[in-house]
Image (cartoon, rainbow, N blue to C red; front, side, top):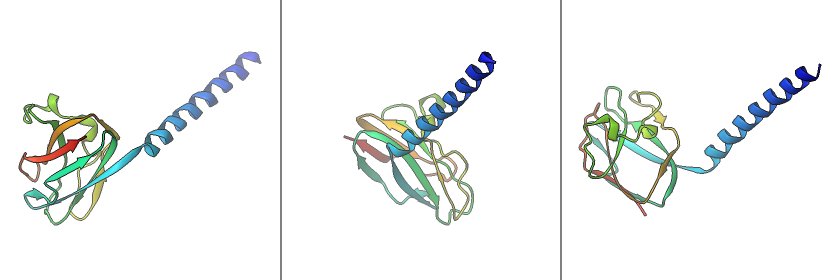
Length: 129
């Protein structure tokens, strides 16, 4: 009987801990909203403070699915190993919809963002101060 009580207590504790961590991540992140139109992002440069962000990408009339890629400035954008994968949207963004990334911690520096599906230029800049 003691083993059952200990097991139930552990399961409840793990579930509570996971829920608390998920809630904490959601509360401690801000949203950066970006809009894509055919061939470009409408925001070419963004400046934010160091912190954790969720990227919300909207597809405004592109006519097909789009995505989002974030890379530290100076790294080869064509190599997926240089992409900040938590910044990827969790699902392709269909025309007329929005999708969000996972929370992404950004350190001071410069980043470039683009969409290989649209395709957009790779000179859009995110500055983190």
